[in-house]
Amino acid sequence: MKTALIIPNYNHHLEIENTLNALAQFDLPCYLIDDGSQDDTRYVLQAMAKKFSWVTLIQHPYNRGKGAAVMTGLRAAYQAGFSHALQVDADGQHNLADIPQMLNTAKANPQALVSGKPVYDESIPKGRLYGRYITHFWVWVETLSFDIQDSMCGFRVYPLKATEQLFLSQSLGERMDFDIEIMVKLHWQRTPIIHVPTKVIYPANGISHFQGLHDNVRISWMHTKLFFGMLKRLPQRFFKQNEALHWSAMQERGNYWGIKLLAESYRFGGHWLCRAIMYPVIGYFFLTGSASRHASMAFLAQVKQQKPEHPELSTNLTWQDSLKHFLSFGNAALDRIDAWCDRIKLSEVDFADRHLLAEQIATGKGAVLLVSHLGNLELCRAISIHQKKVKVNVMVLTQHAENFNKVLKQLNPKSSLNLIQVNELDPSTAMLLQQKVQQGELVVIAADRTSSNSQGRVVELPFLGKPAPFPQGPFILASLLDCPVFTMFCIRQQGRYQVHVQPLAKTLKGPRKGRDERLRDAMTQYSERLAYFAELAPLQWFNFYDFWREDDNSLRQPVTQKQEH
Image 1 (cartoon, rainbow, N blue to C red):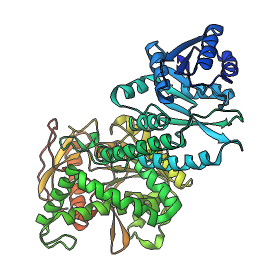
Image 2: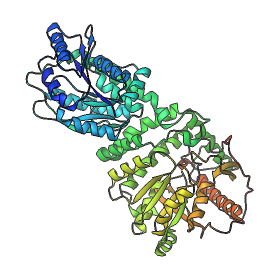
Image 3: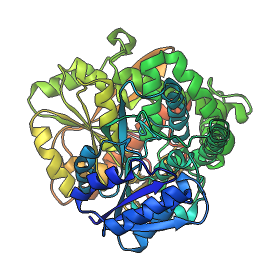
Image 4: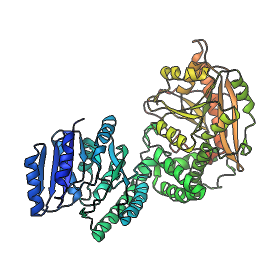
């Protein structure tokens, strides 16, 4: 990591020499930016550049603003070949003793923006302290997350490649709005944000260049633009617009930040606050997510074709049915949080088949549960409660497993649910899970979606009257684990949760001869059971994409539907 110092300066001449003397010990090149200071400060800065050989002075001919000065320094450092830049204020406000910790954090996380998280003493003006909380709120809204804990601290280590990419693609405010805006937009650009606590003081003789009226107007206008920028990004973030994409290339609707925001809202305000936030967002998804809306209508129409008098659907399908479908997804998100927090009472769960799993766990060996994106998968936590806290491992075919694990642990540190992210269901994954099964743990695999790396390895099976591609991977993995296999579906009906578990096979492992037929038979049973529950509770079907879409690269194996299952 090659790091330079960036110090913006506008009429700060009293503390700059002390600041540079304190920084000399770190032996870092420094870009000192004079943002059109008055003559007395300009002469001091010129003298400092002569005194300290490691200081490069860059002068703006007139005052452009703190943001412009920082941008000048960052771009100069990037062009000089530095990978990172540490921004420090010139007025002695920052605790320079924290620099080693900042740099070590950046070295361990080279792609991240490392920012100080201020710890204030009594010197901070109360107006500024309270004003920061207003900004915190808007930043949380603009990023749909609580990842940015403080966006106004100018004590930061920037990753210059990501920062330069942002400069080339976005316009940024050049004054006091800069620190906030660049952090939000770097977050949008998926730059990780890490905070390091640091003591911040306001010197008694300090000079503030914050212009009360003008800068507050600038910051308010910036938040307005960021808010609408957030709204513009929502469809891309939750419901990918491109219908041609394979589902695994689409943004997850329940992504980490959205779920974390919902979880924090739940923590502070319960269901009422969650619903106050969720329903407007779901409404926006519905209006702007044309691909997901069309997929919803197509699925409901397919169910309607199989069961014309379905009680949950209108006689003639309308947009209102699709909106109910979207709202059902939002309500299921609240159900998931209830499950994560152990706030679902066992008396609310009908689990008539639990003895099947209890008998299996009693043998000391685990099992595979094949599930789907239908209903409330997270109620597998209820299974762990029923089965004496047996460990439940859920295979996740997305890049969010680690983040979801963090959210689960924050909501409930005693959670016995473990999400494991895999890129492909293959023999190497089987080796990872073999020990868990031998230890008596449950492995949960969704068998209704192809993975990002194996969308061609599918079998076409009849599903609600049309052939649909089902992945071979989960069934191959189950055969490699050589353990009992069950199907599990959990749906909500008449205000109660219903968990349905059925044996699929004592094992899918067997002689190589007949392997394909054995797997096809298991896949057919699974698809028939999935179709039954999808038809029973269509509004709890959460595959918001064309489930029957053919993959151009698929190796499809047509299978005739069997009548005896």
